[in-house]
Length: 121
Image (cartoon, rainbow, N blue to C red; front, side, top):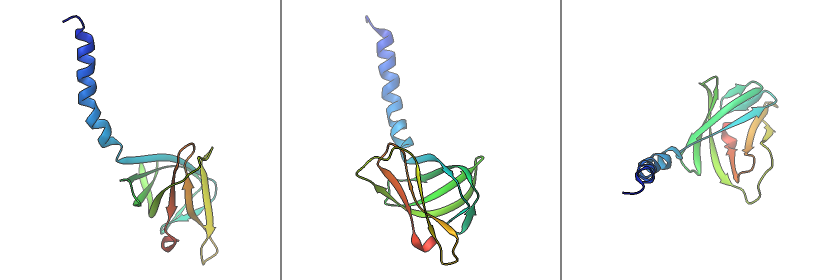
């Protein structure tokens, strides 16, 4: 064989491709929250959070992580937007107790958005 390195590379890629397909089932993004907000039944302090959810939706359970630990979970609907947003956008609303609540997270340069269930607010 003239190209054993090419054959080895193609074999490796063929083995790794199924693993990358499985890894896509776990979605994650980072988000900065500027105010104290309610997400689900938990008050989140201002700061940077990693958010994760499994599956393609539309209904997903979102985990908010801080320093590798889950600090809150909340149900959400994963939606696809037609227009792309240029930066992360956190949409806040008010609860019946007049506190700020997380309503939606739009992800920068992607068409995905997480819309949080009104019942969790």
